[in-house]
Image (cartoon, rainbow, N blue to C red; front, side, top):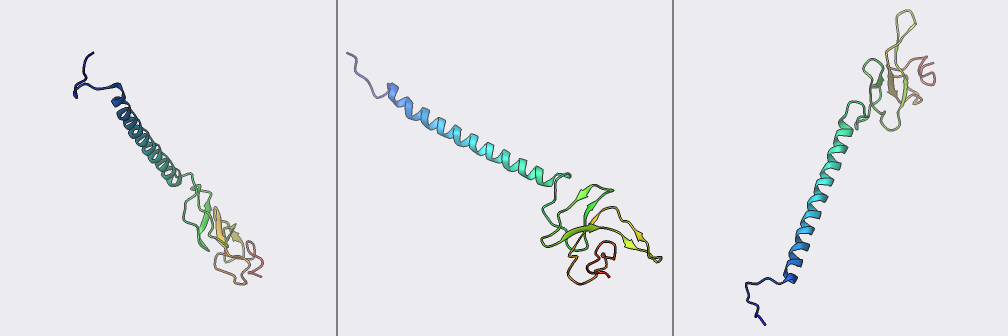
Length: 121
């Protein structure tokens, strides 16, 4: 029988290295997948067609027909038709919707009898 010297490797000593290498590979792949998910989320929320994270305040445009840009109204506000009343009492339509707190008892400058009858009588 041959004696094993300390320089000879046994088949058992390769197993821990293989497991260690596989663990590193799994961690690396997990990090890559996580980064890819984060990048996809950032791209989605910054794309032109998605809703923006910041909300539109009272009097701000919620949706503009001409540019097709949209913004959600902040909490407690609703979309009303845009437009203003000219010197003849006619409504001049603006393309889009405006966020408003219509119904608060105050006729704001962006509200009028045709888009917020509760406040502007």
